[in-house]
Length: 428
Image (cartoon, rainbow, N blue to C red):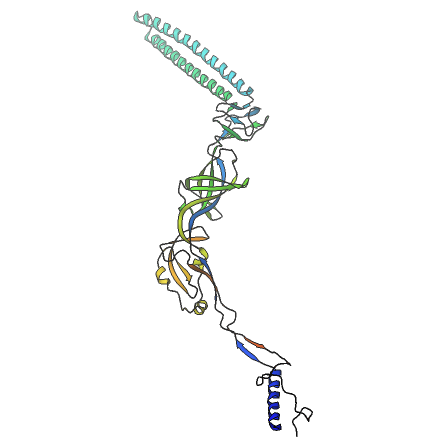
């Protein structure tokens, strides 16, 4: 009986020592799957637009100049004045031209007097010729005298014609100086508004090779136009009649509308960049828009309603070999489908467990979304934009625990007390 108690005590002691010691458990973390980032294929309205910059100007602008030189005597129009056709805008000092008119008229009077004088001489020569002819018929004068009388008449008639030409020339001179005098009054050629005034009272205007500009008139600011610079890569998509929206810095919260009227063929090269001018018609009923304002233009070149679209980032996604291997693939299969095809792209779709590539035909784009033509995928399809591989495949974790009151794995209760008669050890 004593031996049996001793054996039980020894087994309990071993269990107690085992549970009180250090317990080591080792576990391995499972393989972490790659993280797949996706976006949904959706149906929506899509608008393709082209952005450009340009400047506002009046549809009809007229430079009013001076055909004669002189000093500005009076100004009758200023900036922003509304003027009518024929209205006087300015007047030059006319004194010099008035003097020229008087001198030309005096030359005309002298030329007319010369005509009268020579006409009298011609008539006298004709009378002399008639008298000489009568005498020559009676053989009272020689033939030489008759010829001299005839020559005198012809000479007098030539002098009269020359004097008459001088009269005509003098009249032309008078008309010319009168026209110059009339040009000292600067009038408006159109109905419009003064957008520029280049002279002041007392300033000398010199009209030599070309007429100096005194005023700039805009015909009608209720209708304006924008000259937008279109890059050569985009000009093929611009056509007359396309809708345009634009903003100006003066009204940052307001959008103005217009339409493309013309794409000019003249190329403008600036620092090796080729652009073409697109003329955009704009209504300006409230006169908010001013000539010279800078406009940020958006031209609508295409529109699709309720079309299948996908973010452009999904079409730019190209998985590497390591990503394909992690997803259990060797390569994509759309390269042959897109070989030689235009507007063809690869879309990787994810079904929650695996990815696959799909060849899609693309349509218009607004820069962030792309139209998908046909029906290779449907709305709600998850398109892959990125795949992130895990940093490590496995990891070992070690945990240590200790307890002084743990029960023995072999006994259901606390260890029995040592047998009596000893100090904690077995009986001898």
